[in-house]
Length: 107
Image 1 (cartoon, rainbow, N blue to C red):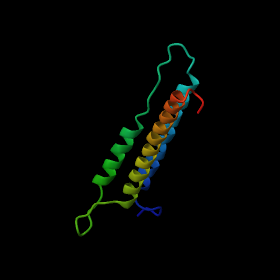
Image 2 (image 1 turned 135 degrees about the horizontal axis):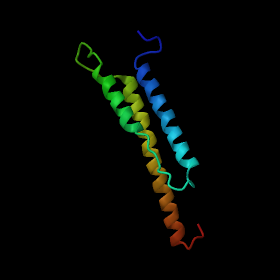
Image 3 (image 1 turned 30 degrees about the vertical axis):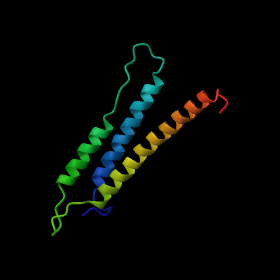
Image 4 (image 1 turned 45 degrees about the vertical axis):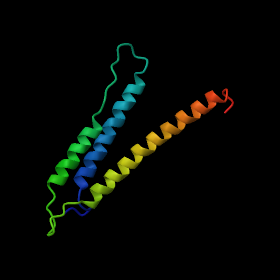
């Protein structure tokens, strides 16, 4: 039994993937002026999704057959909330730009 609770390995893997993604993005930014540099992509979401699927497949159902793991569901909800907020902020920014353009740039 894991003293830190269930799914610790999956959480550790997600943190590793996030750190890798951060390094890849930082390298892309550092090379923004490098001739011939090809931007790299860390397949964070695909790797994380695969890890979650593996974790869920390994869950033993409760007596009633339920395989819901609260920690995984809460992590999915937080991830989705962050994605939602990013798109909302993008939409708000686009609306501000359109309003500024319509009003002649005066805000």
